[in-house]
Length: 426
Ligand code: HEM
Image (tube, rainbow, N blue to C red; front, side):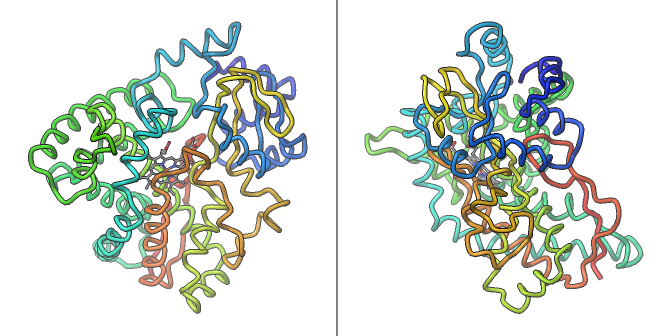
């Protein structure tokens, strides 16, 4: 990331992208007015040190552009910006945003790795997890009721984020990774310690604690993978360890560790937000919830509409590996483009009345919340299934659920969700 003073100076000079970065640091609300201004300024807006887009077709074009590689890397730019980029790449902690994580790996390695992971992460495998996810959701909902009773009265608020939104995806991921029951708390601790690495703008102490969690996770994972190799289980990680491509080649140890780490972090740092954002939207739009009660076949569409209107990942970045063009604008080699996924999702040229939560919207699934191009989210089918099961089970079980004062957004910049969501169940 660029130093704060560089961004602050550009923001004061009126630079829209810098103003966006400053706004996301100082407020937990999405700066929708800035998205709008950026879109109005043109399909691809050139700011002082990078490019930014909130236009749906341009975001799609950037994500599909073969001359753009994933991630923000000023390292190939010339001058002081390039030096700064090379320094920040060299000091980044090994984790979901460093190679060989799929998120920032490019062809040919990306093609080879992704093909292998996709062979294991099939639609059928996700369908196979549905029943188990329903069971996990029901168990968690049982314990919510028990917790409310233990607190003295079923009208005492329960915080839905830790007790439900976070536990559901974590438990599913633990099943996928074949984590034994005794290690679950440990993995949860590594995951929540390492997860902030998916966000931007960490302070130095945060950075150090992320590094520490990542290295402890790495140590645990090395032993866990060894076990899966010797005694394969029924889980997807065992299948990934055994997977071979057409030439009989498997993922290397570091690729396996990076993939398992990414699945852990990407899986529960994002799905928790889908669930909390969905609860808030459905609660605040009782007419839409009533429609879902009458016509439950609309639940998958409702999940798409939650993903569109309040996406768990607000933006992503790309860097030009050679001179290229985006929507008629020249982007030089080393040029960085910020693609505002949340901005594209509110492009009025694609979504009529974009600020309205409407589960009957026919094209909600054109949102770009799972990104696009070759880095399109590998967990999208799983996230959609968990979103549907998690939200539907909760509102079916507690039709009188009421959110209470005290809801707070998470202090994140790229990710967006709730830190706490107090609710009474009846
Ligand atoms: C990539 C969003 C859930 C695994 C991505 C990207 C986005 C995203 C935006 C691409 C970033 C970019 O283009 O730079 C989400 C959202 C989720 C979710 C919004 C939940 C609502 C999951 C789950 C898993 C997962 C449950 C795994 C089990 C991955 C992986 C990649 C990825 C492995 C990298 C794919 C690649 O680079 O080829 N996700 N994700 N995600 N996601 Fe997800």
